Length: 337
Image 1 (tube, rainbow, N blue to C red):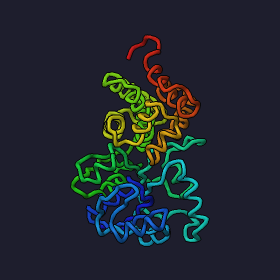
Image 2: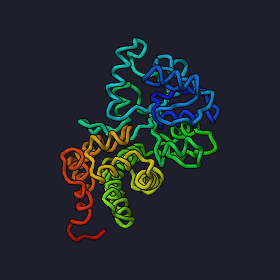
Image 3: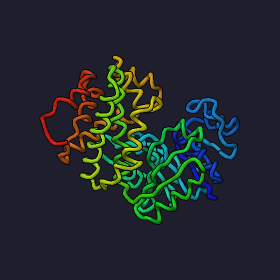
């Protein structure tokens, strides 16, 4: 049993805190707002993200980062990708004890995204802005719909770290009977898969909003996986990663489920809402919107063809018509699959 700190009390961070507590760990959950931390601590629920779902009584909560980290033997980060660097910088500036960075303990990222402006994966942000040695950083990905996992429905996920021993150490944190953690040493592949699937999910949701059926959905998912794989391999990931839980598994869950924030945002776009109104309807961060431009930029730099991703960028950043997404799939020249 370990003392673990989860930094970020959104739906996924809170759900992982439950998974860890159900596995017998002592968990402290950091929430940005003191009133939410107080509710989690005293009422054992997170009404802003998980409604009336009851959390394990063993989860403590605080709005003070140093308090959350005090005595922690491991850290789990669940801060949105686009604000992670600035959040880490603010913590280091505001708290003298964090001036040198986060504690020198194993640190696991739950964040799925690529940073705009730098094209940096989250593990790179943690290394640079958190001053964490890369050997101490792991990433968790897979089909991770938080509502289902919070309801303790069985699922599998992948924990990736630079070495086999480090990956196994992270995976050992997940002892709850309903979540099986598999291991990988392909940090790049797992991170790329987890980030880009959100972009493809927007396209699939948009197709549903336009009234298209399962043939279109299957085509977008399949060709979307091809895009993710091309980019991941070009960045140094391993091809087989994208056929597993972190690749195909996460992509199918995110694209097909109405519980997926990115799918719901795409659905709203397909129904005629603009990006701002669609985001307001979803009500939570849909990482695919911010990630799309970073993915498209990285693909262009590497010469990787990603027509679905380019089309999502055209819609969310440049106001293109939503049917541009499906046109991108169908208007390409004849070529082998």
